[in-house]
Structure formats: C-alpha cells, structure tokens
Image (cartoon, rainbow, N blue to C red; front, side):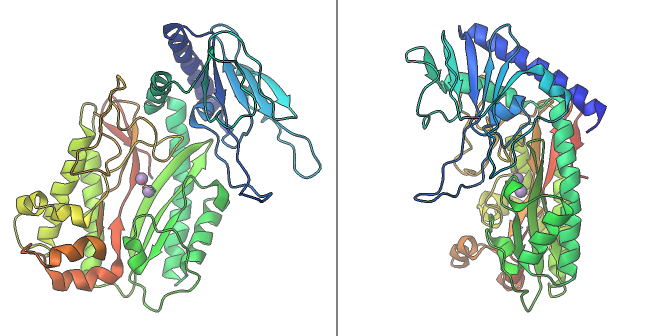
Length: 432
Ligand code: GLY
Ligand code: MN
Ligand code: MN
C-alpha cells in the first residue's frame, strides 16, 4: 500500500474521530462502543456462514472480517480497540498489519470473545442483541439509538479522500475480473467457468466478494439478481451479463457489463451500445446540487428514446414513459450509494435524518438525495426482456413491437454500471 494511502487513512481516522466526538458531546455521551459483530453457526451445525463486520466498525478499523471485536471511543483518549485474536491450533491466529493506522488505537489482542465492561453514559452500536453479557447495565447503555445511528450513517454518506482511493482501487481490481469474464465468454465458457475466471483475475475468493457475483448467460441476464452458476455451456450464446465487484480494505466495487454473443440478433449489440451511451450521458449530468431522483427520471426518458429509436416502441417518448412502459423494461432504480456496503446506508433519508422514501411509482430507487461532493454512487441503467413484466402489456394497446421483443427475449437484458464520485466541479468516474 502506498505512503499516500496511509496518510489519507490517518487523516480519515482523525476527521472521523472528530465527528464522533462532536456527536458524543451533542448526545451527552461518555463513550461510543462499536461492536464488529460475529457469525452464528448454521442451525445444529459447527459450520459458520461468511462474516462481514458491521459498517460503522469498518469505517474506522479496516478489518472487515474482524469478529467479536470492539472499538471504544471516548471524548479525549486514544480509542481502545479490543481485537479478537484467538490462538488455537486449528486456525492461523490473526496478526496486526504493519501499517500506520494501528498507532491510532490502543490495541488489545484478546484470546476470548470478551465483552468490555464500561460505565457512564454509553452508546452501543452494532449487533449486540445476541451477546450473552451486555457491556453496560441499563439504563446507561443505549443500543443502536435511531438518532445516533442516523447521524453515524450520515457520516458514511460522504466519502473521505481515503475512502475514494479505496473505491477506485476496488474498481481497478474488479476491472481485471470483467476482462477475464469477457474473454471466457468469447471462449464459450459456462457461467461457473466465467465466475472462476472472474475470481481468479480479480484475485479474490468467492467468500470475499462484496455481493454474490451475477453471471447470467442468455435469459439469465434478465434475472436482476440471478444467483446460480450453471456448469454447462448453453448450445446458443446470445448474451452475457456480469455484475460483479471486489472489496479493497472493506470498500466495494459494483460494476456491470453486458456483451452480445455470436448468436445474438444484430439489434441486441446496437442496444448495448445505446445503453453504454445512456450511462455516459447520465454521468455527464452529475454535479453538486443535481437531484438523484432527476437522474433516475432522466434514465427513463432516455430509455424511452432508445425504445422508440430502436423500433421497440411505436409511439412517442412521452407516451412510452408516462404509460409506464419504460418501467416494465427497467424495474430497478438508476443506482444507489456505494461504500462499505454495496447498497450503502442513508440513501432514503434527508441529511437531517427525516425519511425521504422513493416515490410510489419508482419503489426500487435506493437513493433520493441531491448530489453533494464526497458522495459515491452507482449509475446503472438497464433494459430487460422480463416475461413477468412484459406479458401483462401484451393484452393492452401499448404500441410495443412484440415481434422484436420476442426476437430479443433469449438475450435476457442489458445493464451497464459504473461507480462515480461527486466532486466540487462535477464528477469523477472511478470505473476505468
Ligand atoms: N450488484 C447489485 C447492484 O447493482 O445493485
Ligand atoms: Mn451491480
Ligand atoms: Mn449497483
């Protein structure tokens, strides 16, 4: 890791601790105790699912797999990090990295999953419900107060220079995976082999991906969160959609690309090009003050124009959008906030914490804010041929070119997704 990133990380920690201490003052707290969480074994089993440490913990401590660990922040002292590091002969004991951030904390490596004993007015943050003992006796220990969690979430909405560097590096690593996936598709691989090519090139094990990679051939490209990896190569290869990421120091990339196969009809490739252009247009419009909901609505207008231009809809763009046809071709939102979680926190709240839900006719939108420097969002327009959504329109007078839709059905759909930071001047596309 570069010296610059180390310096940026230290500045990130200092700035964040300052914000925590301001909140402690406002909330009359003696400490905030962040719990990393821990995995529970499968029922009746001695095997555990993959674990991801709580976002607020990872915001300060770059150990996204740390379990049974605590960070205790007080108004003045160096924060105390109780890092669970059991020594046994079954596993390799965790070791602290040789990195400058460790000097920001008083670190105790603890052999047992221990709960700290705290006194005073303490706010507990994290999944503390299942703990056998509480670090503080009620009424002094307030767990996950919505007001405080809301304020901490708000801190995560605006990324520091360190966080943006991490997100950029996650993107760079994911890009190598996408290139390998494209090459595997050209070599007629199955979904499973494309997945393995992706993981190999992006240098990660499957259990470390930020979300389950979506690797859909043909009609599977039209299943928004398709969750299987078919081990057989299909006889015909119309399309491949890969929505796959990478973590870097806890921060997620979330990139989607779609490719036409040798058996795709010509209009499919043209639609892929049009969707790339649509993604670029939306990103070009990003700037501080732009409402993300307006970008979502712009996606629908431009998608309507694509449907008209590519002969899928024989009416006006206005009619296509207003009658809900574009929503049948793209049922998800234009994107979401991105950070330690792939769908990052606080997207449906105003900066003061009041709820800002998605509009009733666009319920899948995950972010309803005005863009502000420091935000990192995805821009991911889609165009799908999903029978469940399109079939109900067949019995209406919607002027849809069903012959062309049916020709494109075996291609499933298209999604193109980049990760973009909002800057003072406009935007910085982190996806190479
Ligand atoms: N990969 C999930 C999403 O794009 O939101
Ligand atoms: Mn995605
Ligand atoms: Mn996404």
